[in-house]
Length: 275
Image (tube, rainbow, N blue to C red):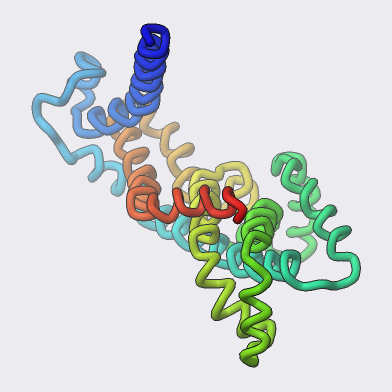
Protein backbone atom coordinates (compact mmCIF):
# COMPACT_ATOMS: atom_id res chain seq x y z
CA UNK A 1 0.00 0.00 0.00
CA UNK A 2 2.81 2.40 0.92
CA UNK A 3 4.52 1.81 -2.40
CA UNK A 4 1.27 2.45 -4.21
CA UNK A 5 0.70 5.69 -2.32
CA UNK A 6 4.29 6.75 -2.91
CA UNK A 7 3.97 6.03 -6.61
CA UNK A 8 0.72 8.01 -6.76
CA UNK A 9 2.30 11.00 -5.03
CA UNK A 10 5.28 10.92 -7.39
CA UNK A 11 2.94 10.81 -10.40
CA UNK A 12 0.96 13.77 -9.06
CA UNK A 13 4.12 15.79 -8.47
CA UNK A 14 5.33 14.98 -11.97
CA UNK A 15 2.00 16.08 -13.44
CA UNK A 16 2.11 19.32 -11.45
CA UNK A 17 5.64 19.97 -12.69
CA UNK A 18 4.58 19.36 -16.30
CA UNK A 19 1.61 21.71 -15.90
CA UNK A 20 3.86 24.43 -14.52
CA UNK A 21 6.33 23.97 -17.40
CA UNK A 22 3.49 24.26 -19.93
CA UNK A 23 1.63 27.14 -18.25
CA UNK A 24 4.63 29.31 -17.35
CA UNK A 25 5.40 30.51 -20.94
CA UNK A 26 1.73 31.55 -21.31
CA UNK A 27 1.89 33.36 -17.98
CA UNK A 28 5.17 35.07 -18.89
CA UNK A 29 3.80 36.16 -22.26
CA UNK A 30 0.51 37.46 -20.88
CA UNK A 31 1.71 39.41 -17.84
CA UNK A 32 4.54 41.07 -19.77
CA UNK A 33 2.15 42.20 -22.50
CA UNK A 34 0.56 44.53 -19.93
CA UNK A 35 3.82 46.04 -18.67
CA UNK A 36 5.78 49.06 -19.75
CA UNK A 37 9.26 48.44 -21.11
CA UNK A 38 10.85 49.84 -17.94
CA UNK A 39 8.79 47.59 -15.67
CA UNK A 40 9.57 44.58 -17.84
CA UNK A 41 13.32 45.21 -17.49
CA UNK A 42 13.03 45.55 -13.70
CA UNK A 43 10.47 42.78 -13.12
CA UNK A 44 10.17 40.12 -15.83
CA UNK A 45 8.30 37.46 -13.88
CA UNK A 46 6.05 39.33 -11.45
CA UNK A 47 2.56 40.67 -12.04
CA UNK A 48 2.53 44.23 -13.43
CA UNK A 49 1.96 46.97 -10.87
CA UNK A 50 -0.10 49.01 -13.30
CA UNK A 51 -1.75 47.32 -16.25
CA UNK A 52 -1.39 49.12 -19.57
CA UNK A 53 -2.94 48.44 -22.98
CA UNK A 54 -0.44 50.64 -24.79
CA UNK A 55 1.47 47.60 -26.06
CA UNK A 56 -1.63 46.32 -27.86
CA UNK A 57 -2.23 49.78 -29.33
CA UNK A 58 1.36 49.91 -30.62
CA UNK A 59 1.05 46.39 -32.01
CA UNK A 60 -1.87 47.43 -34.19
CA UNK A 61 -0.38 50.81 -35.08
CA UNK A 62 3.10 49.58 -35.93
CA UNK A 63 2.01 47.12 -38.62
CA UNK A 64 -1.17 46.04 -40.47
CA UNK A 65 -1.94 43.62 -37.64
CA UNK A 66 -5.63 43.47 -38.46
CA UNK A 67 -4.89 42.50 -42.07
CA UNK A 68 -2.49 39.77 -40.97
CA UNK A 69 -5.09 38.42 -38.55
CA UNK A 70 -7.73 38.42 -41.31
CA UNK A 71 -5.36 36.63 -43.72
CA UNK A 72 -4.63 33.90 -41.17
CA UNK A 73 -8.34 33.52 -40.44
CA UNK A 74 -9.25 33.15 -44.13
CA UNK A 75 -6.46 30.66 -44.85
CA UNK A 76 -7.17 28.60 -41.73
CA UNK A 77 -10.92 28.33 -42.22
CA UNK A 78 -10.70 27.69 -45.97
CA UNK A 79 -8.01 25.01 -45.65
CA UNK A 80 -9.76 23.27 -42.74
CA UNK A 81 -13.17 23.27 -44.47
CA UNK A 82 -11.85 21.98 -47.81
CA UNK A 83 -9.75 19.31 -46.10
CA UNK A 84 -12.65 18.19 -43.91
CA UNK A 85 -15.07 17.95 -46.84
CA UNK A 86 -12.67 15.94 -49.03
CA UNK A 87 -11.58 13.70 -46.14
CA UNK A 88 -15.20 12.97 -45.25
CA UNK A 89 -15.96 11.77 -48.78
CA UNK A 90 -12.68 9.87 -49.11
CA UNK A 91 -13.01 8.27 -45.68
CA UNK A 92 -16.51 7.05 -46.54
CA UNK A 93 -15.32 5.63 -49.85
CA UNK A 94 -12.35 3.81 -48.31
CA UNK A 95 -14.36 2.51 -45.35
CA UNK A 96 -17.73 1.53 -46.80
CA UNK A 97 -17.55 1.40 -50.59
CA UNK A 98 -16.03 -1.47 -52.54
CA UNK A 99 -14.08 -0.61 -55.68
CA UNK A 100 -11.08 -1.97 -57.49
CA UNK A 101 -7.74 -0.85 -56.09
CA UNK A 102 -9.21 0.49 -52.85
CA UNK A 103 -6.60 -1.00 -50.53
CA UNK A 104 -3.76 -0.16 -52.92
CA UNK A 105 -4.83 3.46 -53.16
CA UNK A 106 -5.25 3.77 -49.40
CA UNK A 107 -1.85 2.15 -48.94
CA UNK A 108 -0.33 4.85 -51.15
CA UNK A 109 -1.94 7.63 -49.09
CA UNK A 110 -0.73 6.44 -45.68
CA UNK A 111 3.05 6.91 -46.30
CA UNK A 112 2.41 10.54 -47.29
CA UNK A 113 1.78 11.31 -43.61
CA UNK A 114 5.48 10.84 -42.90
CA UNK A 115 6.76 13.25 -45.57
CA UNK A 116 7.93 16.51 -43.93
CA UNK A 117 6.47 19.66 -45.57
CA UNK A 118 9.92 21.26 -45.84
CA UNK A 119 11.04 18.46 -48.17
CA UNK A 120 8.35 19.43 -50.68
CA UNK A 121 8.80 23.18 -50.60
CA UNK A 122 11.01 23.46 -53.73
CA UNK A 123 8.88 21.30 -56.10
CA UNK A 124 5.75 22.97 -54.73
CA UNK A 125 7.15 26.40 -55.46
CA UNK A 126 8.09 25.43 -59.01
CA UNK A 127 4.62 24.03 -59.67
CA UNK A 128 2.86 27.03 -58.13
CA UNK A 129 5.09 29.39 -60.16
CA UNK A 130 4.24 27.56 -63.40
CA UNK A 131 0.55 27.88 -62.51
CA UNK A 132 1.00 31.60 -61.85
CA UNK A 133 -0.36 31.37 -58.32
CA UNK A 134 2.56 32.80 -56.34
CA UNK A 135 1.38 35.56 -53.98
CA UNK A 136 -2.19 34.27 -53.98
CA UNK A 137 -4.15 32.77 -51.11
CA UNK A 138 -5.27 29.94 -53.39
CA UNK A 139 -1.73 28.57 -53.68
CA UNK A 140 -1.26 28.35 -49.91
CA UNK A 141 -4.71 26.83 -49.38
CA UNK A 142 -3.97 24.13 -51.99
CA UNK A 143 -0.65 23.29 -50.33
CA UNK A 144 -2.19 23.19 -46.85
CA UNK A 145 -4.98 20.89 -48.06
CA UNK A 146 -2.49 18.58 -49.74
CA UNK A 147 -0.38 18.32 -46.60
CA UNK A 148 -3.31 17.77 -44.21
CA UNK A 149 -5.36 15.38 -46.33
CA UNK A 150 -3.43 12.12 -45.76
CA UNK A 151 -3.72 12.24 -41.97
CA UNK A 152 -7.32 13.47 -42.05
CA UNK A 153 -8.40 10.79 -44.55
CA UNK A 154 -6.66 8.17 -42.42
CA UNK A 155 -8.50 9.29 -39.28
CA UNK A 156 -11.90 9.52 -40.98
CA UNK A 157 -11.53 6.14 -42.68
CA UNK A 158 -10.55 4.41 -39.44
CA UNK A 159 -13.46 5.98 -37.60
CA UNK A 160 -16.00 5.06 -40.28
CA UNK A 161 -14.74 1.48 -40.27
CA UNK A 162 -16.11 1.19 -36.72
CA UNK A 163 -19.64 2.13 -37.82
CA UNK A 164 -21.66 -1.12 -38.18
CA UNK A 165 -22.51 -2.08 -41.75
CA UNK A 166 -25.94 -3.08 -40.50
CA UNK A 167 -26.88 0.61 -40.22
CA UNK A 168 -26.12 1.18 -43.89
CA UNK A 169 -27.84 -2.06 -44.88
CA UNK A 170 -30.98 -0.98 -43.02
CA UNK A 171 -30.82 2.41 -44.74
CA UNK A 172 -30.58 0.73 -48.15
CA UNK A 173 -33.64 -1.39 -47.34
CA UNK A 174 -35.50 1.84 -46.53
CA UNK A 175 -34.54 3.27 -49.92
CA UNK A 176 -31.41 5.27 -49.13
CA UNK A 177 -28.71 5.43 -51.76
CA UNK A 178 -25.03 5.95 -50.97
CA UNK A 179 -25.34 9.74 -51.01
CA UNK A 180 -28.24 9.81 -48.57
CA UNK A 181 -26.57 7.24 -46.34
CA UNK A 182 -23.51 9.47 -46.18
CA UNK A 183 -25.49 12.64 -45.42
CA UNK A 184 -28.01 11.27 -42.94
CA UNK A 185 -26.07 8.46 -41.24
CA UNK A 186 -22.32 8.79 -41.59
CA UNK A 187 -22.01 12.57 -41.30
CA UNK A 188 -23.93 12.87 -37.99
CA UNK A 189 -22.01 9.92 -36.52
CA UNK A 190 -18.68 11.32 -37.72
CA UNK A 191 -19.06 14.77 -36.15
CA UNK A 192 -16.70 14.11 -33.17
CA UNK A 193 -13.97 12.67 -35.42
CA UNK A 194 -14.44 15.45 -37.96
CA UNK A 195 -14.21 18.17 -35.30
CA UNK A 196 -11.13 16.56 -33.75
CA UNK A 197 -9.27 16.34 -37.06
CA UNK A 198 -10.38 19.85 -38.04
CA UNK A 199 -9.18 21.22 -34.71
CA UNK A 200 -5.74 19.69 -35.24
CA UNK A 201 -5.65 21.11 -38.78
CA UNK A 202 -6.75 24.56 -37.63
CA UNK A 203 -4.00 24.74 -35.01
CA UNK A 204 -1.37 23.61 -37.53
CA UNK A 205 -2.40 26.08 -40.23
CA UNK A 206 -2.70 28.96 -37.76
CA UNK A 207 0.84 28.36 -36.47
CA UNK A 208 2.42 27.48 -39.83
CA UNK A 209 5.26 29.77 -40.89
CA UNK A 210 7.46 28.38 -43.69
CA UNK A 211 4.90 27.89 -46.48
CA UNK A 212 3.15 31.21 -45.93
CA UNK A 213 6.53 32.97 -45.76
CA UNK A 214 7.66 31.50 -49.10
CA UNK A 215 4.44 31.74 -51.11
CA UNK A 216 2.93 34.96 -49.72
CA UNK A 217 5.63 37.56 -50.19
CA UNK A 218 3.43 40.66 -50.35
CA UNK A 219 2.95 42.42 -47.03
CA UNK A 220 -0.81 42.66 -47.57
CA UNK A 221 -1.00 38.84 -47.85
CA UNK A 222 1.20 37.94 -44.87
CA UNK A 223 -0.23 35.76 -42.14
CA UNK A 224 -0.13 36.58 -38.46
CA UNK A 225 2.79 34.27 -37.71
CA UNK A 226 4.89 35.70 -40.54
CA UNK A 227 3.94 39.21 -39.53
CA UNK A 228 4.98 38.67 -35.92
CA UNK A 229 8.31 37.20 -37.06
CA UNK A 230 9.08 40.32 -39.09
CA UNK A 231 7.40 42.48 -36.47
CA UNK A 232 9.96 41.21 -33.96
CA UNK A 233 12.79 42.76 -35.93
CA UNK A 234 11.31 46.23 -35.57
CA UNK A 235 10.44 45.99 -31.89
CA UNK A 236 13.40 43.92 -30.68
CA UNK A 237 14.09 46.36 -27.85
CA UNK A 238 10.44 46.60 -26.81
CA UNK A 239 9.63 43.06 -25.69
CA UNK A 240 6.19 43.88 -24.18
CA UNK A 241 4.92 44.92 -27.63
CA UNK A 242 6.10 41.58 -29.05
CA UNK A 243 4.38 39.79 -26.16
CA UNK A 244 1.16 41.66 -26.95
CA UNK A 245 1.33 40.43 -30.54
CA UNK A 246 1.89 36.85 -29.38
CA UNK A 247 -1.10 37.06 -27.03
CA UNK A 248 -3.30 38.22 -29.91
CA UNK A 249 -2.08 35.27 -31.98
CA UNK A 250 -2.65 32.79 -29.14
CA UNK A 251 -6.11 33.80 -27.92
CA UNK A 252 -8.13 32.43 -30.90
CA UNK A 253 -6.61 28.94 -30.56
CA UNK A 254 -7.17 28.88 -26.79
CA UNK A 255 -10.81 29.92 -27.26
CA UNK A 256 -11.34 27.20 -29.88
CA UNK A 257 -9.89 24.58 -27.55
CA UNK A 258 -12.11 25.71 -24.66
CA UNK A 259 -15.33 25.46 -26.66
CA UNK A 260 -14.36 22.32 -28.62
CA UNK A 261 -12.79 20.28 -25.81
CA UNK A 262 -15.94 18.15 -25.43
CA UNK A 263 -15.82 17.12 -29.08
CA UNK A 264 -12.05 16.74 -28.90
CA UNK A 265 -12.32 14.11 -26.16
CA UNK A 266 -15.18 12.34 -27.95
CA UNK A 267 -13.21 12.27 -31.19
CA UNK A 268 -10.10 10.88 -29.50
CA UNK A 269 -12.16 8.09 -27.90
CA UNK A 270 -14.26 7.42 -30.99
CA UNK A 271 -13.54 3.99 -32.36
CA UNK A 272 -11.31 3.02 -29.45
CA UNK A 273 -13.80 0.42 -28.27
CA UNK A 274 -15.05 -2.18 -30.70
CA UNK A 275 -18.34 -3.83 -29.84
